[in-house]
Image (tube, rainbow, N blue to C red):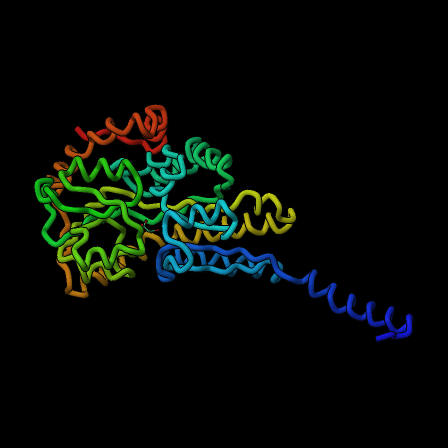
Length: 336
Ligand code: LMR
């Protein structure tokens, strides 16, 4: 077709006029993948982050949150982040060992944290920053730590004494410190993705597990576990992380919006964690499907005695200096 030149120029100009604003307005997409239910402290924190970023960037950034391992399971999601298939994650701190950053497993030392304040003083201190710096050569930038409280232990038999763990197959996250803990209790640890846990408990592939009440409730683990002990022996927390290349490549104003939104979502997620977990525990109790047992001080002392060996055993893996620094920052006092 031979259009007169003036007509062709006019058409080209019109096409450009339509195309340019469309290109300029295409939002930058952040895919934020995680493994827990939306109705948990992490799920709600991710949603709050999305809301804040989208508001503050006036739609220049769009955040797509994928909960419940919809996109990726535990191990895959870290690989996906490094490859840039997703931009953000918030894995538990117990899942960084396979990435080669073994020092993160210091957070899994049993009974390390007396309370949430002790955890916060570690993450806000020197060690918290150093650990994030160790992620950078892996192409990952640490943005924040999110607290999710203390874990309970569950199985299909009462777990009061250390001897009660003997021979139980217990699902753990991929941390060698958690592995050592289960062994110290006489159990047999088995690493398994979070998304496979319900099924594995139901079918008897594993006998028991440990987790925070909000996960026990939202994953319905109480349906397939007869006994829960409120031992609070471990602390669960997350690192909110982003693909470093993606982050560094953001225009400065948008990077500042991501930073401020993470900061405010962190305040929010941390503020709801204790209440959400307490409410979840009440709902688990009210379900009547499982016995929820609060151990006596003497029983907890027995657990502590059995588990302190893990602190020594794991010095070779986590690093003696890292452990000492963690003790100092968390104000840890070894039980007598
Ligand atoms: C688990 O894998 O047990 C949990 O840490 C999942 C989560 O992210 O809370």
